[in-house]
Image 1 (tube, rainbow, N blue to C red):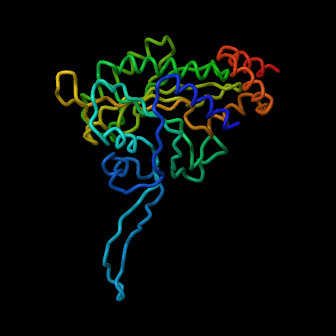
Image 2: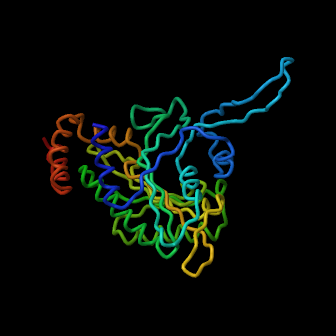
Length: 303
């Protein structure tokens, strides 16, 4: 069943022009100092592993070693992929996609079934674009998300706009205001309800999330889109513009399923455990058209 989810996602991302990448599960602490995670997200990370230290026979330190962390997010690695060589405006928008497993130290009282876990696989993508391109990319992403949810029969949802936490953010107020206004504009264009979530954004940029209601009326955060002007600055990302100058790209973070584990858990709840029967129907209909897939899930709910 998980493979069906992943195969569906791969097909959709291939059609949408994404490049598939892979990144390490563990890396040096310096990367998360650069990103800001160790300043603003350390409570959500597993403790460091101090390795590579060497000692003399008398116990004194010959080589100090360094801290390594399991990655809580894929975005710092994708910044390094962008920065690995010079980039031109002709390459933008550059869409990087990964089924990336991340590790988050959720407190024991919060961990719950498949919907809140400590190791999760995200259908994670980061899009690097010019400022002129970002609105079209955001509109396209929102259509991508709504089509995906519809294919799985999830049709009762609204948007939530998470804005800056005044005590937990990087960058200037002006940058945050611009990013927030752009997301609000794109969200309003969708025609969906846009509910404010003051202070709910990650430390690097505002977020639109799709809040989905299941068959029991419970609300779940599913897909997310974040607009980020800060990581390109912190990682010194740039590209050669048409006029020959070096410019900063805009970075868009997005996940469609959210996490594979939670998405499957929510589908199981939504269809009251009829997952095996539903997957047989889904595989048959998905091979024909997205529209038939949507109708399949709707029929399953009432079967």
